[in-house]
Every structure is written in structure tokens, then in C-alpha cells.
Length: 498
Picture (cartoon, rainbow, N blue to C red):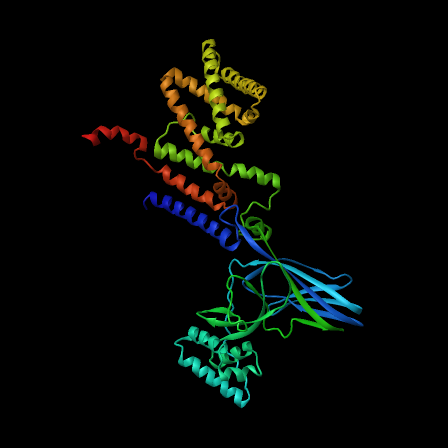
């Protein structure tokens, strides 16, 4: 087997695992691709009123099971009542119970909903229900109405539209049917006669700041392999306002035993919430595929927010050194300098870096004449760097430059080694090579800082850990590159001119 085949298998596996993790976190768990993304939250309050008969009361209130919406949270306000929320595959309901109730009673149910990430459309029944037998004149009018719609339509979609048009016209058959049935009931009857899957439901139009709302009758028709909603009574349907299907295949919305004159009204409020916060708050801790870090303590989260930026800096270093060909002083020293820039801000960090390194090189040149041992010399340089930072900070503070106080975030040991390496390079290669490598290190550090400080990249690095598998794959691929660096191609410029 070719020795490079296992390598490419490894890279492919890393890419596949990284992309799969990113897809799962976004599509299945709802983690947004951008940090500031907001989602709509609809808060719905149902106010239930009835009059107790001085007897035990059981009040059953049907809850929605709309696949297009996800329940965020819910609670009830019912003093002195026992409350039970019952959910199964068939129905969902909340039941209030009390031993003795007399007089006017008010119960509240409040829930928050958001649009579902992956709504699952309901399957159609294997056997369609039989059409209801109408009286002879009504049956004849319904059949004539359906025949007219058939003649003016070529497929199921246009049949539905044609039936809607006829129900809103001055047709005599429509007038006869409306004398006994509602438009929605007529529509369901016609669809059943035409063998088109249809059902009557009741829903709530979600519009902000609405009070005393009632459920409206709607029709769901199976068209183009999906259920579509129609407001037959209004003759039109607004797609701008979402509708929460509240009642479907249930005999009643509210069933009160031991009470009378019961009624339900709804109030609706709209708000927005961070999609990232909602995704992490609704995440299940036992999810095997959840590699998020929000279950960790806050202190560890803040620590990882910094650590997980280091692979971004490593990618920049590999790209600029292996592909571009920039020379640096130290392999990953620019990454540590870039992390310091995040704390100090870019301009302050660059000025501080230049001042510390320049002053350190001047004083280090004097130490080279003392013929010190390596350990003593490095220790002296560390003390020197600390002294320079302290002096620079005190002077800047007295001048009112409070931004310079953050320069203490510089890694002092790394700075000391940088000064030592540059000093040795000066003695061996000259000042020009020091300037080239020092400038290269600073350029790499600045580019790494710009990447690591980008809000979108920070969001992806912390919330999509699969990104780091993609970075690993890219680093491994660039590690196999043995061609010319881009900056080396300038040597061939005379040949190109010839």
C-alpha cells in the first residue's frame, strides 16, 4: 500500500468528523452560525374562566402539538388547585382539580414557543374518511360544485384553489350549502368527496400584543407531499403571521366537570432571544453527540475561550511560514504575542513589543561582554524584561496613558527568550537578519491577532469544536508541502523578464 494513502485517509476522516460535528451542532441542536443571531419567542397565555357549582371540579385544557413549533417553557397559575400536565403520543393536556369549588374561577396557562428547527410533517392516513352523507339537495349541490371545480382545474393544487374561489363567489349551490354549513365544513366535505386528504383544525394567529384572542377554524390540505394551511372563512391566508395549530383531532378545547359558563381567551406577546443561549439552555446533558462546553463551570468556560484560539494562531503560523515563507524568531512565539495583543489592544501591544525588544537588545549587548553562563544570562534577561515593563508602565501612567497598563499581559519569559535569540542572531548574522526575523514575527503576530480577535472566528472556535478537526487536517496537508515558498519565487523574476 502506498505510504501516503493512510495519511489521506486520516485527513479525510478529520474533515468528515469536523463537518459532521458542525452540522449536528447547527442543524440538530440549533447553535447559530453567527454570534448575534436572534430567534422569535412567542409567549401565549390562556385565561380560563368558569363558575363553580359548589362541587368537585376537573378542568381539562387541550395543549397544542404542532410539529412546526417547539415548546420552550411553560407554567400555570392556579392557587389551591392540583395541576397535572399529561403528554402522550395522542394528546397533550393540562388538568386542574379541586375538591370543592364555588363561584367564579380563573385559571392561567402560559407557554413560550419557538419555530421548530426540523419540523416533521405529519403523515397522511392510510385510509381516507368516508364523505358525510348530506341531505339530497345539499348532496346534489356539493357534487355540482365539485364537478365545476374539476372542469376548471388540471391538478390537485388548482382544484383546491378553484374550490376556494367558488366558495367566495355568488354561486347558488354555495348559497344553499352555506345555509346549513360553514365554509370550512363545506370545504372539508368537498375535499373528502374528491379523495383529497384534508382535516379541520383550530389555530391561533401569532401577532404581537394581542389580547382576548380566540382560536380560528382552519383547514389543512395535503398538497405537493406536504400539509398546507388555508383560512377558508377569510378567503385568504397571511403567510407573514405564523399560526400555531392548537386543536386537532380532539373533541373539545376545554372540558370542565363541576362548573358552568366556561370560556377561554388567549393573549400573545412576541420577544426575541439569543439563539445561542436558547440552544444551550435546551440542550440535553446526556446527549452523546453534544460536545458543547456550556455545561462546564463559568471559570473553565472562560479558560477554554482563550485556549481554543491557539489552534487558529497555529494555522496562521503554518500558513505564513510553510506556504508564504515568512521568517520568524521562534516557531510559535508569534502566537503568544498575538494572545497578548488581545489583552492589550493592537496598537498598544505593538508599541510595547517594539519598546521592550529594542531596550532589551541594547542592554543585552552589554551583557554579552560579561562572559556570563547561559543560565545566568537568561535569568538576567528575564529580570531585565520585568524591569523594562515596570519602568515603561510607571512612566506611561504618569503621562496619563492608562491603556499601557495592560502591557503586563506580555509573556515575560517568552520575551526574554526572544531578546536572547535576536541578540545571538545579531552576533552571528548581523542586524539585517534580526530586522527581517523580528519584522516577520511581528507581522505573523498581527495577522494571528486579527484572526483570533474576529468575533465570528471566536464564536466558531468555542461553539463548534469540529472546526479544530478541520484546522488539524489543514495543518497536516500543509505539512506535506515541499515546494517553493511564495516569497522564494522572486528569485526567478530575472528569468521571467528574459
